[in-house]
Image 1 (cartoon, rainbow, N blue to C red):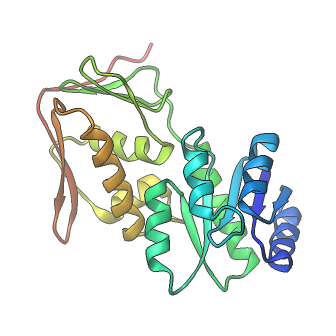
Image 2: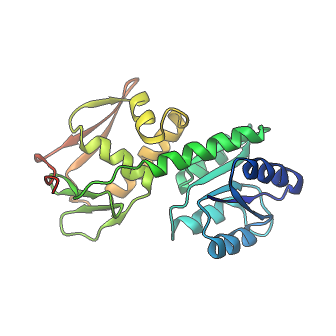
Length: 234
């Protein structure tokens, strides 16, 4: 496994690289945003540890550019008082975050948790269909009627999958967090941002027949029109 570590704090980057190296990762370093994009394109890493406060090109811009082309898992590095930065990063498609100061072992645990989630993403032989909405997990595509498919991230697809398999049921927040991120990662703020991103993509088509509703103090539910249909396994 290959990890790209992006931080302008050279000493911190070296410590994280050393710890990940001991855990069996091949590590690549970049110390500014432009170098990060160059190394990402050249090395095709399995995961990116990305500081938000970078010279030349900030972490938000790096995350945004990567997400337009790929869904490589991204773990943000931020500081405690930068809650708005965490929210913005999650909205841009980051998968997780670590607050400074942190122990390098914590970063390793987060990296391993994110990679487990990616590696255990379910693969089905055919799309899941509810009403006029179809989710293709193998392509990470959301299709509504005859409209152009919308590309989802792995986390968005995983969240929509559990909703479509449980249409009309109220799903508790903790169950959704555990399903999408696993027991080792995810929290209410991350789920809230993921729901927000998924709603925006669902609403790109005014003819959609699914409504993702918030149930205060409990969780969320997907209101469906049409019967649930899933192709049989061949």
